[in-house]
Amino acid sequence: MCNFWYIIFTNVCLCLGLILIHFLKIFLGQRNNAYGDNEYSGKFNLRVPKSLHRHLSERAAAENASLNQYCLYKLSR
Image 1 (cartoon, one colour):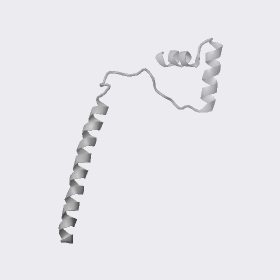
Image 2 (tube, rainbow, N blue to C red):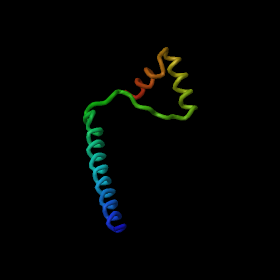
Image 3 (tube, one colour):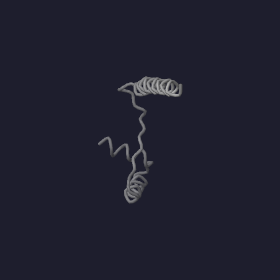
Image 4 (cartoon, rainbow, N blue to C red):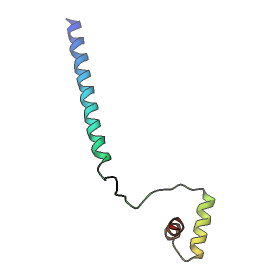
């Protein structure tokens, strides 16, 4: 009798695992396609050394521009 419940429990766990995998594939697939391939937010984060941050901030101030405007100018050249 104990062997019967072990088989039932094992099959239930297997089915639940397969359902979870199927759900995750669907969910992650929808999430990846939510924005499309050609749509961008216009924002991204970039980590730079403190010395570069200071240099860019000083150059932006010398140009009477915000750091964002100065970096955009430099990146677009």
